[in-house]
Length: 120
Length: 189
Image (cartoon, rainbow over all chains, first blue to last red; front, top):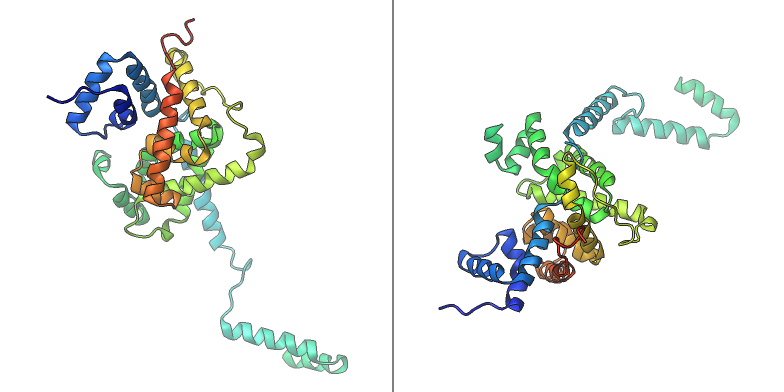
C-alpha cells in the first residue's frame, strides 16, 4: 500500500505533473492528492493556466510573414542585378590597379603626366 | 499538408532549403505560438513579441545556408529568438521596470472568454515578470516554448545542471506566487 502523499511532497512535482512529464503511477497518486486537497488543487489550477492558457498572437502572423519574406527575396534578387555597385576584381586586376595608383603617388609632378599618358 | 504534420522539423527545413516553400509555412505555423509565448513572457510586450517572431523566421530564411546538419531546429530557432529578445531588452531597458509595467493581456477573438480569464492571465503575467531574468528565461523556454532541458541548455549556452537549478528555483517561485491565487474569488468580490 503506497504511503499517503503530503502537500510538501506533491508541491515540487506539480509542474511536471501538469506538463505530463511524470510516470503513470506517480501521476495517479498526485491526482488523488489534488482531488482531496483544496490548497494543492488551487496551485495546480494556477500552474495549468501558466502552461496551457498562454497568450497567442492577436492574429495569425503568416500573412505578415509571407509579405516580409517576399520583400526580402525581392531585395536579394535586386542586389544580384547591381554588379556596378560593388564591382568584383580578380587578384590580377586588383594588383594592377594598386601598382598604377602607387606609381602615380610616388612619381614627381613633371613625370606624372608622362606616366598617365603611358598608362592611357 | 497532412503528411507535413508527421514530418520532423529538421526534414521540413531540409525540404525548404531545397526549394519547398510550403515547408517554410508549415514550420512557421508550428512555431509561431510557442515562440510568441516565450518572447511575450520575456518582453511583456505583445506587439514587440509578434515582430520578433517574424524577424526570427526572416533570419531563419536569411541564414538557412549556415544551419548545421544534425542540429535541432527547435534549438536553433529559439536561439535566434532569444538573441532578438535580448537585443530588444537592451534597447528598451530604461522602460522595462517590471512588475509595474505589466500590461493587461491583449484582446483576442472571444471577448467573453477573455473577460473570464483576464484576471488569471494577468496574475500569471505578473508572476512571470516577478521572476529574475535568468529563471524567467528558462521557465518560459520550458513551460511555454516546450523545449527539452538539453535544448534549453543549448539555447542558453550553460550546463544542464545550471538549467535544472534555474528551472527548479523558478518553478518553486512561480508555484509560491500562484499558490495564493483563488480564481473563484478574484474578480467576483
